[in-house]
Length: 75
Image (cartoon, rainbow, N blue to C red; front, side):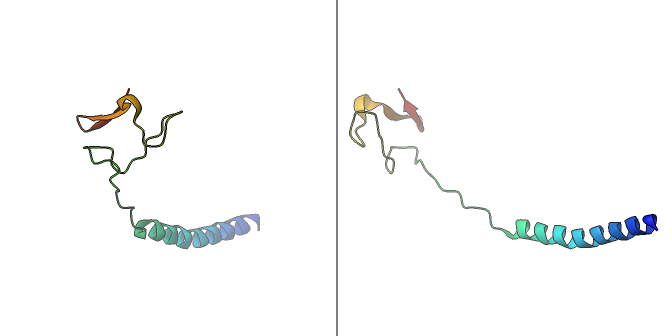
């Protein structure tokens, strides 16, 4: 009797789990991947706001943020 109960419960768990697993996989597979958004153009700081403590917004005091070899450098 106990063996029958375990066997039937195992079948029930498998029968209920398989559709859930396949449905979940199809949701993951069908979701579109996010589009890459370019944040830095490699030339200048256009589109960026610079804020240095005790200075106004976009006041790049003493050229703290600068572009060199297509990289942003902070000194």
